[in-house]
Each structure stands twice: as structure tokens, then as C-alpha cells.
Image (cartoon, rainbow, N blue to C red; front, top):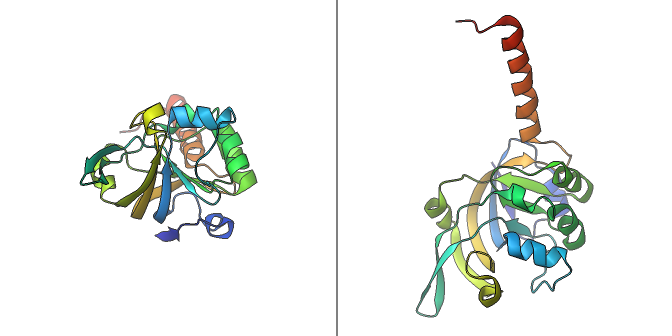
Length: 194
């Protein structure tokens, strides 16, 4: 397993290959639909995303004794952000995207051009993934966007996933799709062998 610590440099990200397990530590920024749209349309970004990680996550966060506590931090479906992500990667210097379900061709190309990776986190394990969150440094747009859509600045330790798109333009999803098509063609040609 490769370990990366914030800030995530271009050199460190370029060493990651599709299919590798990766562990992220340090600062991670959550972002969902409203924040992506806001940034895409030229809205102000209250944090510096350069060499950072965007986590497609709408965490469940409780306020306890003036401290924010993350109770659930599972990934949300990344493909919803496909229209925004290529431009945001280029404009903000984002190095890591964490989410579930993969992203499209535009993001794959932007990852290759700009030196970024897409990391597939485990879906359905929100409470387990929240254990990687050590603290909340800040929250932005809470009043405007609501809890799930706000930009949470999380300090994480050992947030794990699988590199599904690397900075060389390789895609685990594309690889699986191609292998599945070949397997289907073989089955249709030759039938199923018991």
C-alpha cells in the first residue's frame, strides 16, 4: 500500500498506478454538487485546493462541546460531478479525488494532463470511513449549502481506497469494461461452458 500525506505533490501522485491501494493522511476537503457548481461558475473558493484532495462526501457531523465530530463519512457517487471536474482539476491544481463509482472520460483525460488521481473508496462503509477523520479544521458554506453540501475541511489519518484512475490516463473502470465486453463476446460466440 502506498501512503500519501498532504500536500499531495505531483511527483507522489504520478507514482500511483491503477489498482494500487493507497492511504491518505492530512487535509482533505469534502465537495458535493452545490460546491462543484459554485466553483465551476466562478464562485469564490474559501480554501486553497492546490495539491489537495477533494472527497465526494456529504458527512454526517455533530456539534459537541464547540467541536465538530464526524459520525459518518462515506463516499457519494462521483459521476454527478463529471461536468465540473475537468475544469476544477485544471484551475485549482487538485491532485486527488476520492469518491465512489468512478468518473468519465473528461476526468480521466484531466487526470492524465494535470497529474491527478481518482481513488475509489468503499461505498456503504460510512461509519468505518469516519474513523479515519481525526478532526474538523473548518467548515465553509454551511448556512448556504447545508450540512451535506458544505465544504468540510477534514484532517484524516489512513483514509484508504484503490487508485481507479491514475495520472498516466489509465482507468480501472475502462479495463473492467473492456474485459467484460470480451468475455461477453466469447460467451455469445461459444456459449457457456459448464
